[in-house]
Length: 287
Image (cartoon, rainbow, N blue to C red; front, side):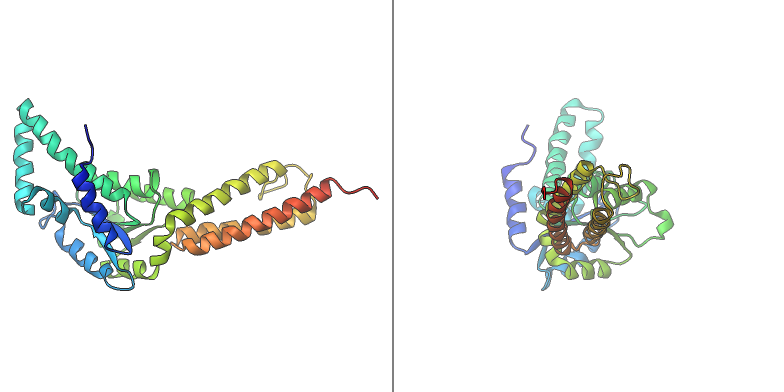
C-alpha cells in the first residue's frame, strides 16, 4: 500500500519551504491532557522569529487539518475505532488505514527536518521513542534537542543511552534542555550549522574514514606504536592530525557543523602533505 499520500507530502513540503530551517516537534499526544498542544505552540512561536525563521512540523496541527476535525474529536475517533478494531476484523482494517496514514505522515515529516525537538517525560510515548531513536541514532543522525523539565533522575535510562551512543560513537549533536527558552536560544545561535548539517556531517565523517584508512596503511595507532616503521617526526605529525580530528568531532557534537567541516578540511590537507613526506622517507632518491 502507499505509505504516504501525495497530498500529505505536499502539506509537509510546502510548510518546509516557508521557512529557512524546518524542525520536528515530537512528544506525547495520546496521554497528555492538552494533547501536547501548548508546548509545541510556545516552541513554534519562539523559533519562527528572525534570525531563525524556522517552520515546524506540529502533528497536533497537521493531523486535525488532514482529517478536518479538532484534536479532541480526532482523539475520540481514534479511541472508538481502536475499541471496535479489537473485536471486529472489519473495523481493524479501518483503524489500520487511518493510523497508517498518521504514522507514515509523521515519519515523512521527520525525514524532511533539519533538526528535531522532543519533549520527553515519564509518560508512555511509544511513537516518540521510535521517532527519537530513528532521528538521532539509526537513520538521520541530525541535531536532536530534548526538552525535559522533570528531575533528571527520572529521565529514561534507555533513551539517555541511545542519545549518548549517537553523540559518542557517531558525533551527532544530542542535547538536553530544562526549558523551552533554552532550546530556542540554542537553535537561534546555531541556525547556519543546522541548515548545512547534512553536507558538513557527511564531509567530516568521510574525512574520518579516510584518516582511519591512512592509519591502517601506515600501521599506526595513536595509543602506541604497534609497528615501529614510522619515524619519530612522522609519529609527531600523526598525533597532531589526530588531535585536529578530535576537534572536528567535538564541533559536530556541539552543533558547530561549519567549524567541523573547516577543521576536517585542514585534516585532509595535513594528511596529503604527510603522505608525501612519508613516501619520501620510504623511497629516498639515490644520491
